[in-house]
Image (cartoon, rainbow, N blue to C red; front, side, top):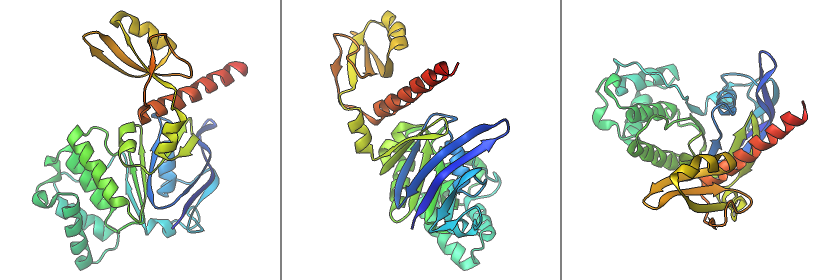
Length: 300
């Protein structure tokens, strides 16, 4: 089971590249695809889901080029896009049966599979309620259920927890962890805590390019000794933020407690603290933006 992305790029009109020179090899586990909005994550997801073809490079599934043989991957693919549509007047049971028929599942096999998925996603008790009455988290769980109808070997979920409350987000993370097992699960998001909770590997994407590919532990080690904490008066925070990358700020009775990601001690009062993935993400993105700004200035 191997999904290989080889030097993939995607160009749009006006010579705008949504993705460029992207290479990655995926095996079973949860890959957290992390980056800011507009980084190229959704473009990559659409290519992997065989919705669009790359302009350059290729993607292979067990050796088959999915641009030339899309069914080789489609038959084992589950996909939950960022904007997942439902039929509000259908129940979850009816909706999943409809999608199972579209995917070619037999009636008896579909009934057994849907029953399993309703239990897995904790929707059995509301299976007959119209989808229009579901909460955002419940709709996302229906989305996961439809993505798993064909028991896929590759599961792609794009920004799955946007708009969910903390309880639903935690439940969704747990579900993704349970599903990984012998599957390749690709979680595309800009929410660092989602990746921190479930990912076995992390890829950071910025401006259509891959910044790095590492385990969460390796990413944390990369910023060890570069995360600082200090206390500032409220009136000093704005000016301090203009000079330093602040990953967190909490107001307390003695002032604003800030976490700063920097190669050097940002102030005499700042002390080193243990890094989080949020710190590591901010450090890498800040470095990439600084490098991009310097390159742009040099090209003028």
